[in-house]
Length: 163
Image (cartoon, rainbow, N blue to C red; front, top):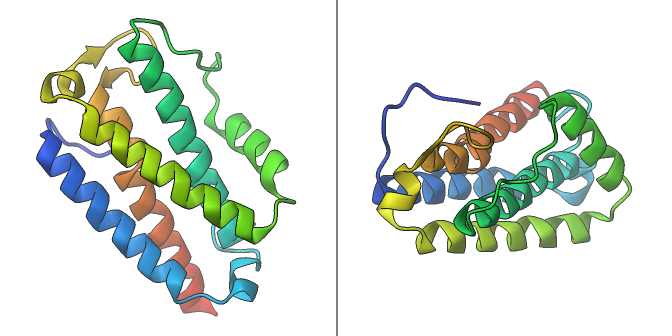
């Protein structure tokens, strides 16, 4: 999910991340474990699958940003095919226990938030033209955190309203 935003400062980005994460966690907290394992939360995915998906993209962002900070080109899959990447992630996590997925969901968030907190305003505003994030770094962070949280929270809420 991308947004038409020219620039977000570090404090704005951190505030948006925290707000959207809190909203997502609020929706998740209201669910029973059985609800988290029912298909349909996002296409055929369960809420568990959605949370594993979010965690996998946060982990990718951590890896790719780490490469950027070391002056290396991130090892991103080319050709860039989000659907293929998502299908591969789903295949890897679909049989993971809910408790494991929830723990990874918490851990990847903590690591991602710590990364963003450690970045300078200059680093977040640096624009890349070759590979991920293909624009300012803050945009790659937002796409994998606050915008991603909102996208999936809204899908889960829409699914719940149909229940």
